[in-house]
Image 1 (cartoon, rainbow, N blue to C red):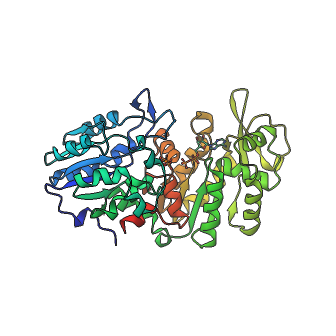
Image 2: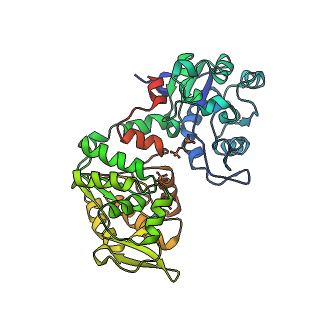
Image 3: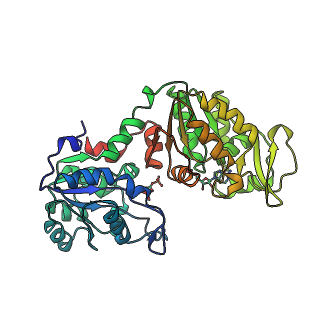
Length: 395
Ligand SMILES: Nc1ncnc2c1ncn2[C@@H]1O[C@H](COP(=O)(O)OP(=O)(O)O)[C@@H](O)[C@H]1O
Ligand SMILES: O=C(OP(=O)(O)O)[C@H](O)COP(=O)(O)O
């Protein structure tokens, strides 16, 4: 059983709270604060109850452009919460422990990016993670540990799986909500339609296979790069530009896997038409008219596909959307994502999962979904039926 905030009397308690505020960063500034806002309920509830809150989080990956300090994150949380949120440039040293010890009730401090320490970017079994410098160093300053970082729950890293061996541990409100919705997919209304788009082709093939074999999906609609790969697997001649894109992205081997999947499951639909750029505009090509002259990559599904898929989606009991239907970042190729996602808001129940997918929803100003997951990889792991290490550690 996983304990939640309902089981915690937080008055005066030093709570180590792992959140996922990994966000796009530009010039040291936060380019998007959606993941910070997602944790406001959990943090406010703790602080309102008089907890002393030490926040643990990562930002980016070592060597990446967005591998940054958490000072800007602390400033933004300070603005979002009615309680003071400070920043400390240490994570588990005596400076960090002293800062946590000095917290007053109803105060929070954001400790430095956990991934500034090499062990945090490695995967461990929980017992071994409990023995890392980060966990051994910080645990004495904490009374309890609370994990709200659903979006990182597929990682078996020390700050995510190491503390429950040493401290009484709890799930936060984000974690609770995500597990309630995504962990109970089999109880949602049918017919259940999965719309798989985006660019993580291997993951999408894995999800499609898993949900069909486990009878979780009645229909799988493919779009985005995975839709193009399925079209190529079926022999559609989409032109050299699309083939090159798929090859350069390293997905050529996935064409055979997609072909095997399509042979095994006739519940999978592929696009009827695609959109390419021609003379700076969107130009649609019907798959039935191929081979045709196409000198640009397929960047979106076409309007016939939007209509056919849209009807299936709005008549669904539950629609699960993962991955945009096209290159939504460019306006002419946002049509597929907009059309299919708007149709999803008319289904009985709609669930959106994926980092870029959630960004697309915000960018296109779409509204009316029943659940927008904070997680990409974590949501996919759960939807595929695999356990999340950080959740298992809480158990
Ligand atoms: N036809 C396409 N060609 C190239 N890129 C695409 C296409 N369709 C979608 N994409 C890209 O896929 C990316 C998002 O995919 P992905 O990372 O799998 O989503 P998520 O993070 O939601 O799981 C977006 O940047 C989008 O531009
Ligand atoms: O952004 C995240 O995951 P996501 O890209 O799957 O949504 C999490 O913060 C995990 O980050 P990671 O994929 O660098 O371990």
